[in-house]
Structures are given as structure tokens and as C-alpha cells.
Image (cartoon, rainbow, N blue to C red; front, side):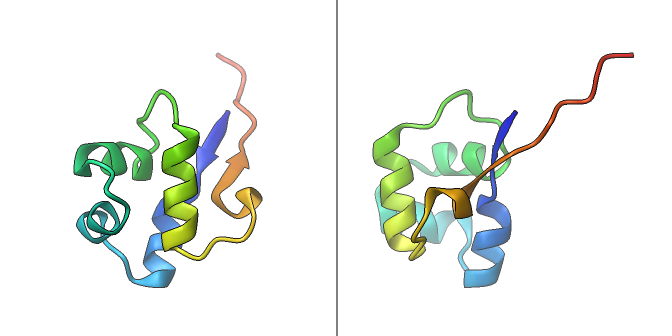
Amino acid sequence: MLRLKLEQIMDEKRYNTKQLSDATGIRWNTVDDMVKNKAKHWLPENLEKIMMVLDIKSISELIEYEKESPSE
């Protein structure tokens, strides 16, 4: 499954959800869902805004692949 590394990036850059929401113009609830990896999909426009604000150079810094464990 693909996951956003947004929480750790925000911690490193000392941003909270409200600050990122204000800086990008993305609704607070949407940013919060993205941070908690609850969002069902990510709009490319939103990812681009986040990357610009947080000075992320590569999408691989923002998104990671995590192998799902088999169901037991």
C-alpha cells in the first residue's frame, strides 16, 4: 500500500496541520486525513502544493510503498 510520509516530514520542518492547511489552501480536514493516512485518494494538485510548501524535491520523499502483511 502507498503511504504518505507527511507526519514525519511535518515534524522535521516544524509544521502542524493548521499551518500546512493555511499555507497550501487545502482544507484542514483533508490535510489531517492525509497526515493520518486515512485519505482514500490524493489529488495531484494537493500533493504539488504540499511539496512546494514543505520544499520537497522528489515525490519519493513524500510517498512510500509499504508491503501489506497477508491476512491471517
